[in-house]
Image 1 (cartoon, protein in one colour):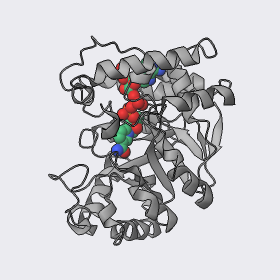
Image 2 (cartoon, rainbow, N blue to C red):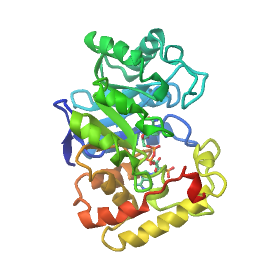
Image 3 (cartoon, rainbow, N blue to C red):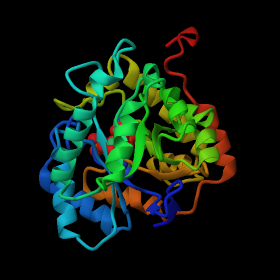
Image 4 (cartoon, helix red, strand yellow):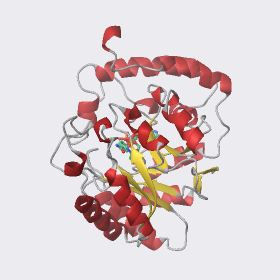
Length: 326
Ligand SMILES: NC(=O)c1ccc[n+]([C@@H]2O[C@H](COP(=O)([O-])OP(=O)(O)OC[C@H]3O[C@@H](n4cnc5c(N)ncnc54)[C@H](OP(=O)(O)O)[C@@H]3O)[C@@H](O)[C@H]2O)c1
């Protein structure tokens, strides 16, 4: 496994981290034993960065990670969690939502206490605000609260995860010194972070955590137009209507671009997001031991060539761009 510097901190984090949404909720049935073994396997293979959130099964993902950490005390594993906005409410937040209603001090502190309890630690390495609204940039009070929690020794560093429909909404937070890290969607289909988020991260030494590198599994190359997602798998919605078919067609084009330069698509998707210098770690979702093995292997593999990376830039897909049609 190769390790990279995490922004301004002195941490050296594994280039392949562990994403744990699926082990908490929203991805259909998931067996606790598989989840536990998956995290152990990733750590055995050198992964030292685990990303979770309270929202992943109301602490379920955090509790599973907490029990793994208990068995591995003494090993330095960097833990990142996230504070959700107060629910019920829109996610992403509505433009009319007030920051004080969705991220009040009481709410932040009470969610933080729950995360500390479920993870079984006194201090969380990185606490992220789970989603954000551009409307809140003029009043980033939640980060003042988190800085106070940092001074109290309950968290080490502070981050934000981008709202998927408007990722650049966090640019002001990055420029104005409110965050030590940003968690961003970046993959062969969605390369928008190159325009603003990556340059600001470079300039301000803000750590970048890449999420959804596999486009929720599509860029692993195993979906077909006939794939049926199980009950409770959020991909029934993500790939609803003709989205799955259109995605699969584009994945086949990507496969042609890669040709025989790389042995497999999932590894290529991970290598692609590790190319920008500002990226500290990518956190593919890992829900079983096999995925831990496949993904962690990329952490020691030969990097993708600059030539192939440049060719893959052509597969950037403006999915939300009305004028170009669906
Ligand atoms: N707003 C936010 O802050 C936010 C949002 C989304 C995600 N995240 C974080 O980012 C992490 C990663 O995102 P994600 O899990 O949504 O999506 P992802 O990494 O793009 O896709 C993960 C899925 O791909 C499949 N997979 C993983 N490795 C594979 C491999 N080597 N070969 C074939 N298939 C493989 C698995 O699904 P199957 O086994 O079902 O095929 C896995 O659950 C999350 O777990 C979470 O920690 C944060």
